[in-house]
Image 1: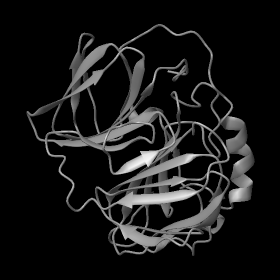
Image 2: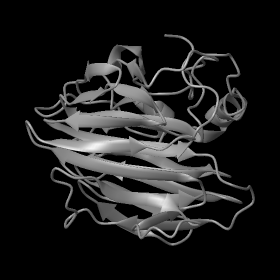
Image 3: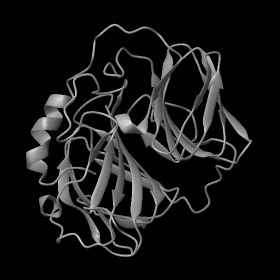
Image 4: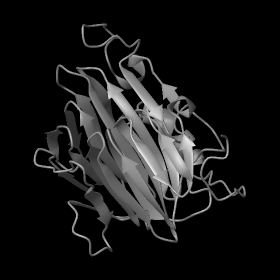
Length: 291
């Protein structure tokens, strides 16, 4: 989670969170976002309380963190890419072993983290302390304020997808929850991991936001379906692999880190191989205007 020195970054985030694009756009069922259109951040270790970077057998990046920003965040300011509906932040973080984000604070945001590789160690001001592996998901209602740290205490690289979603109201009571991914079954089907506290759907994580998060691992040649109703939209991420989405618009191939904006009133068929994540939400104006 990008924030330390947190007091350096927070003013930028506060400004960016208001950059809701109002520019008119032609409706397309799928807007493809290739990975080379994501902003890549590799901050120096001292900015986050880490020791100098060391290259090892399993870490050859120049710095301790490689983060791909899907929306404006930290040093990345782009008025044409500030959010997609209630999805304000999606950062795809790769963290070096024995490094991490020191204690920092958050307010008035629903924060959901999905672990892709390695183990994420979390500790917060609510008294929580735990480590979560692949397929696990955690959430925080930051509300009136919460402080936490996120570190890679293992010997292998850590990769996780962190999403910040706008809450239904500010000033909520801080809360934390998680689900261990050890027994998660998402082979050739979607696992519905996150839903709204106002929804009757039975999911392991509930957030104060009208949004749903699902993941699937699709074998080569197998398919899953994303059926988006009118008045809804979704943000799609190719977490791993090379999935292909087909629909009334034709076909679109993806590689790892690619993404797409999906519009409602359409059925999308996703063919493997691929590990995919979908954030579904109410339809809203906006989306990328810089492509």
